[in-house]
Image 1 (cartoon, rainbow, N blue to C red):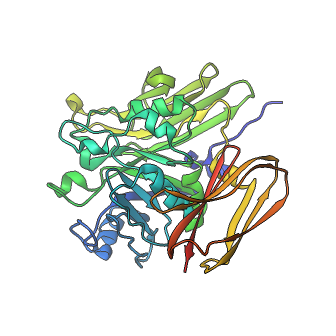
Image 2: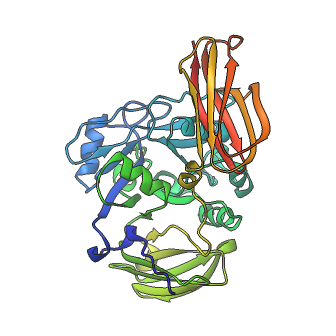
Length: 400
């Protein structure tokens, strides 16, 4: 029997369920770091352009939720070290050390239950070479990042546009990571050229933090610099999938596949594709400007021939915590797994150094309790790290 499912984030025919797009800015700065507007001023500025979701990402500064009616503000931060990474849905500030790494940034955000994005990772001739991250390094990261910033208004004019090929290299290797577009608004030079140029359209049933988190985690959004997607439908026939896409203003559509290859190109505002002989396909919609000036885009998230396991699904297999937290002396580490597997549990300092081994064994599907002494640890924050088969979890705890 034919199975049919609709990726509802892109459906505007509401007979498929209630919901709509919400315009989101996921990289912008205020006077809390190097921006030119106060948080309230910035949120109102974006609200005037139709934004309903704002993530203020000041450098190494967690901006609290801003109370502006009609706008959902999600506590976020740009973790700024040799690299720049945005942490979303944070509860406390992350202050990187000089030796901080991308993996530590990922672990620190996951320890708070947040989502993480690798920013402007493709350096150009006039950008900071420290930003550059190649595909093998991104593939090597464990449990993240959730998103790559495939368009950054602040650096796009001086980049080599190789960011999409790196995205495809990561996807080709089988690592699931979504693409986002942002302003990275400060402003720096010309405000009109930096504001409201890159954003994400998130499909939600309701405007809540929980709904936004779930949509971003599972790729129910598209990135845009001006092209509007009105329909994106996927039909699953078991051995192949069909993808249909349409736009209200695009005039060219490209279907990109493994190894950064264009699998199909169509003129016009709608097109279809059969996904059968490739591991994934993603769609780029283009509104071509005169002589290339003013060209705008939209990018869907990749559609995989075999649906991958996402972090949310992996979470259903594991329950992992330490208590009491904070703690002075003895602590309990509780682990519940639903399938047997190899388990490694250890404690790490916030600089990444392993300071204690707790378990390295093959455990059955059950609840397991480890009682440990942390008397010898210096007061401060630590990461309790679990590696269970292919799942990695981190829990932040404090030694008093």
